[in-house]
Amino acid sequence: MKNEALTGRDLAAALVVVLVWGVNFVAMKFALRDFTPFQLGAARFLFAALPLMLFIKPPQVPWKWVVLYGLFQGVGQFGILFIALKVGMTAALASVLLQTQVFFTALFGFFLLHERASRPLQVGMVLAALGLSCFGYNYVSPDAASSSATTVAGLLLTLCAAAMWALSNIVARQVQKVSVNYSPIAFVVWSGAVAIVPFIMLSWLFDAEAVRWQWLQARWSSWLSIAYLGWVATIVGYSLWTGLLKRHPANRVSPFGLGVPVVGLAAGMLVLGEVITPWQWGGIALTVAALACVMLGGLLKRR
Image (cartoon, rainbow, N blue to C red):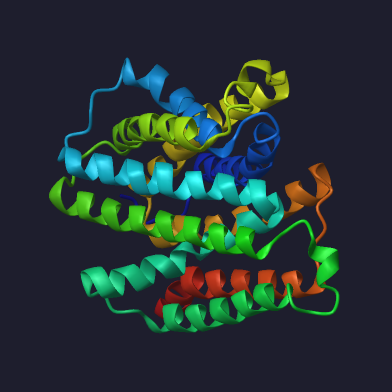
């Protein structure tokens, strides 16, 4: 691992990841026009896993961690996020709210792994809590009708998705302890395959019979969105990101994650015409400030 500045190639890779993951949420919205949340989950991971499973060997880690990661990150994070986007959450706000996984990870790390929170993290969690208060007040304020594109259920489900992402982070930490030299790409591919069957079962159990086969008449744009989610956002995005983390310390790479909600906000507003209310802008500002405090606070303190 290098402890030097990122090269031009590394900077380009980081910017590609930010762009790919930011646009990710708009692609989800497009796909949900023709797929139910559970169908989209199955299709996403089917596209991501099947091509690479033929060429990539299973990761050299205990299978229980592969299964747990697939359930938390695949079924948990994305399954709940897709439901949130369907019942009342915009792509723009989802790109911001999902980043609260940083703070859920800290909470789970404290209770499950007995990790101590640094001062920047403590300040960030206070700012994040104030940001969530703004998002919540948006639904009881006098102009609440203007935020009809989002609902309380959508907000809570998106936060649940962030919590599931955090649990998958805890699993990833445990994997790093027991298998230091495992292949991250193999781990992502094979854990993604774990999510396919649960999503199919959930679709069969909970999707109405009238929509169970609607994906057969899906528009080409919806199929392109799924290909983007499975191949570009998952395979390309995670490959570039894990490559950066292998070559550089996390504190050099993680600040680029601040660009994901910025791109997500811009894409949601420009492509989908989504509207952000004043209280939501307040929540966004506080959440981004909280993330900046966590990602940049330790770096500035060392300087």
